[in-house]
Length: 165
Image 1 (cartoon, rainbow, N blue to C red):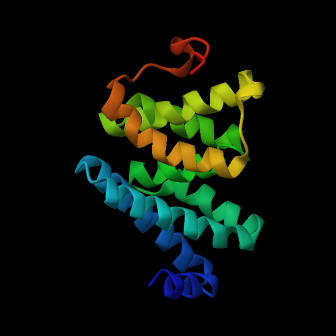
Image 2 (tube, rainbow, N blue to C red):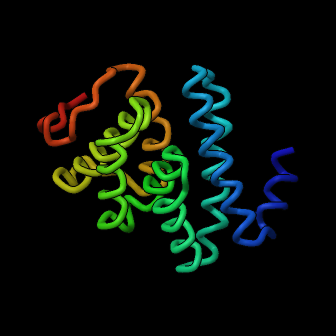
């Protein structure tokens, strides 16, 4: 099944890839709300698979993700689109995540907070930074876990410097 989906996505037009990304983000959020880890992982895989092919569209693909981040009615989709842009285009992703963190539902605020915290660590503590692909996977998995584990919605600067593991 995965092989069939990979072939479909490889030849899909940009609008279908964006719908796949959006569906994955919604699936991931629903899994988080229902505490269904399998559903979360499936949604994460869908977003990652879509991004691999959206990246093949170059700047047009990036602009499409920016449009999702700015205009999608679902905060979960906007959050995950911002996560994809955070490494390459923090100047536009950070303000969106800050807005979601300040005004969203608790689960949305916590995901945005986690993404902002990870970005702050990357910027202020580059010695702790890791490669882009691993960072994307960490951001996607960690944001959902953060709320469940801590229940905190502080801003990244309120957390202080990162603590060694």
